[in-house]
Image 1 (tube, rainbow, N blue to C red):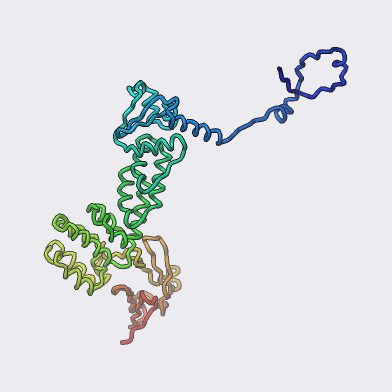
Image 2: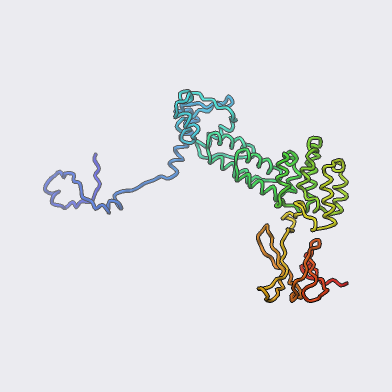
Length: 392
């Protein structure tokens, strides 16, 4: 039977009456109509691929049409070379080039776990895999070996969602080992933000010296007070005292001892037996004592507040004039070099004065004298953001 599709023909046409047998005729069809009416572009969508994968997976389970057996830790996995090669460039290179494995029925792979291979094959034949806290590490390593970037990225995303003060340092080390820069950066940022909690866990005590220094030296380390940093460092040292005591001075160099409360400094820091028996630390202790006496007149990298404390070193501009010989200005402003922002402070009283002297005392500012003979001394109180005229 031959089926001819085309335009409908009128049965009353005289050509039908002239002959009992009608010859087949090829009709001329308008191409525009053909595109719109005579072609049906059908697609079953993703369901077709899913059904094929499902059937191939059934073939694998029943060892039907399998042409290679992957052996991992003594466990055998019958597979199809074509399926493995289509999903992994690792297997494509193994089977498509003139390697010994391309001709052998049994191929042994070392360096991975059998459970990881099973999870990998589940993904190859179904496009799905279950990532858990128990299998994420070896699943990541297996997907890296077989060059399956989709699983690697999924594992990295899973680890990112599992970040916690008790595991962020371990995940950071794992990310650094496998060159996962985005994950490594997120672990670092997370640990900096929750450092007080991180320092209470076992992973913190197992850190290497350089790793610890990389945290405690940072301005963005989020701590409410510097005492937390000091106690964390000392806890780390006491965890392995004999091996870590010789590097105590190097570690305390990055702790901002001058910013400790004076009472805490005297009772806890100077009272620590390990510090008392370390002459190398005397210079750091002396610096802190001087700062407690002199305030901001004594500057060092350890006197710079961390950002989380709400304090920062700023440049203060007092007064000025709008142009040469013009009106004096009352403005007092400060510039934060860390943020690049200007902030207005309380206006300077009696701003008609000029050529006055300005100096800093601890965290306050003193303005005295001026072109006109004036004995007044104004003090800017940084805590209250006001100018005060002290009474003699």
